[in-house]
Image 1 (cartoon, rainbow, N blue to C red):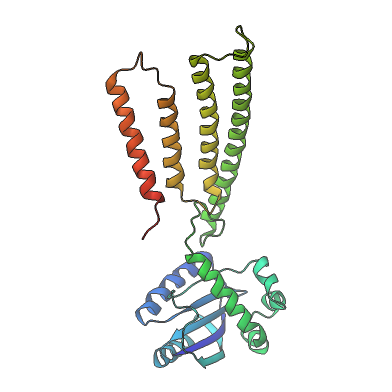
Image 2 (cartoon, rainbow, N blue to C red):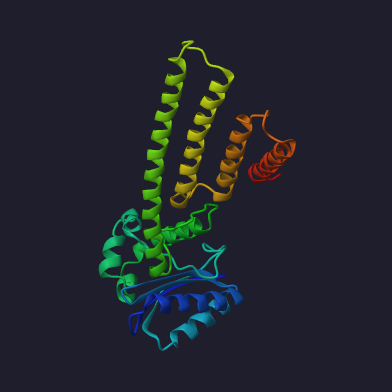
Length: 289
């Protein structure tokens, strides 16, 4: 098994749609040949790493050199390897940002001024740390995290939409914060009005139920706030929090039930909802064996 690294110059500028089309073809072709690796494109330069069986990688590289969409195809490195650095991807297409470039000394200068076949061949010292960086980025892409509206997306239009929706989500979160603060003020008002009425500092059962209802309303508002913010977080799976919010909402109603006026069917139906949501939450939350 070998790893082959090359760079080439595109004969024209490639737009996002063309690059996505190229990436799809690379993934299909390389997957069929059991070739893994990565592909970078910047400043009309293709930088590609291919890993796989010796003969297959060599024949693939020969075919690549004959492709008339690029020129100056330059072999930067070819070496025998015992295992792949990019084993889980038929072809990855990561993007480098300023934070990535700052991690490796000299990489930003190479990326801005010498990211071309000649420059990459002359500055092979950045090759190993660059490969490590790319590997970590690809691992992060398949890590068990979830992000509803990722800032990074292959399609620039979708990326703009995600950013716009994130702004809307932040505005909604701000509004919900105001609701929570007003809810806390309401709880304080209810407690003060009850304890300052004769008989002073005594709460009846109905007073306590009204107070509990106000407390739970604030807690539900907090859960809704969390539901809103999950769209700009990457550490939460939305369905779990939604089920938890629904469970808290129905539990709040059960706590403040007035059984003197409720029909048995209503209570039975509510208990079934609580049971169903409780089982659903348990199934989502339980750890696999």
